[in-house]
Length: 309
Image 1 (cartoon, rainbow, N blue to C red):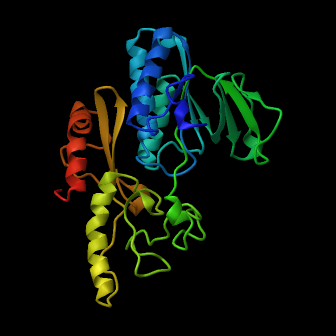
Image 2 (image 1 turned 60 degrees about the vertical axis):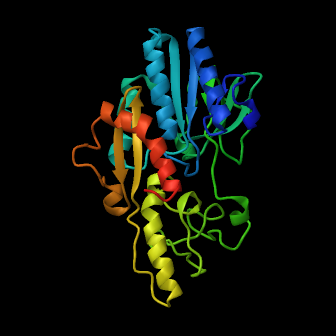
Image 3 (image 1 turned 135 degrees about the horizontal axis):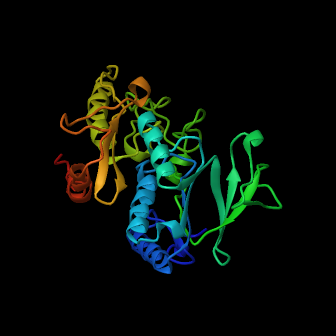
C-alpha cells in the first residue's frame, strides 16, 4: 500500500497529507453518489495520533450515509486490531453500542495487512486467539497465512486506511528506543510520569514520540510541557525530578456531523474522566462541543505551537 493510492480505487486515508484528506473526501462522495456498496473503516495495531480519529471518520461518514436517504443500501464495517475500540472504558462501550445501533458490523482482532487496489480487495490478518477465528460469509479465508496467522480477504467499495505509527527512524535506530515492554522498538523509552528517559537521565521526551499508553494529542503536549520544564531544570541542578504528568489527554469525540463529546481522561483509576469544564458532561453529545472542535481547536493548536497557550 502506497500513500499515492489515496483517492484512487476507493482508498481513503486522512493521515497521508492535507491533499490526501481532500482526495479521501472525493472518494467518499463518489461512493455516496453510487448509492450503494461496502465501506470498511480500519484502525492501526499501534498507538496513533488522536486515538479517536479513525472513529470520527466512521461517525461522520455514517452521518453522510444517513443523510443520503439510502443508508440501508450501504454496508459499513469497522475492523479493529484489538478487542477495544477506545482506551477510555466508558467511551469504548459507548462506541460499541452506537455502532451496533447504526448497523456497523464490528470485527475485532483483524489487522489490515495488504490491499489489492485493482480488485478492490483488502487482506486482514486475524491477530486474536486462533480458537476464536471464524470466517464470516462476507470474508473468505485466503489460501495462505501471514506471519503464521489466519488471513482473510474481503471486497470493498470504500476503505479508510489508518497506517501503523511509531517514533521517527532516527529514534528507532538509536539507543534511546524502548528495549522491552509494550513500546519496544517503536517509541522513546521514558518514565510516563516524569517524562525522563528510563536509561539516559539527561534525556526527556514530549509529545507523540514517547512510549505511553495514551497521550498522542496536542492537549497532552500542553500538559507535558510544564512537567518537562520543571524536571529538566531540577535534573540540571542535581535534584530528582519533582513534577509528574497525570497522563491528561483530550479527545473531542465527533459522534456525527453537528455533535460531539469532550472526552478528557488520564492515567489514574483505569483512565477515569478528568473534565476541565464543569458545564460540559464528558458523556453527553452536544453541538457546543462540535463547535469547539470545528471552529476553535485549530487556532488553539497554533497558539500552543507559538507558546501562547
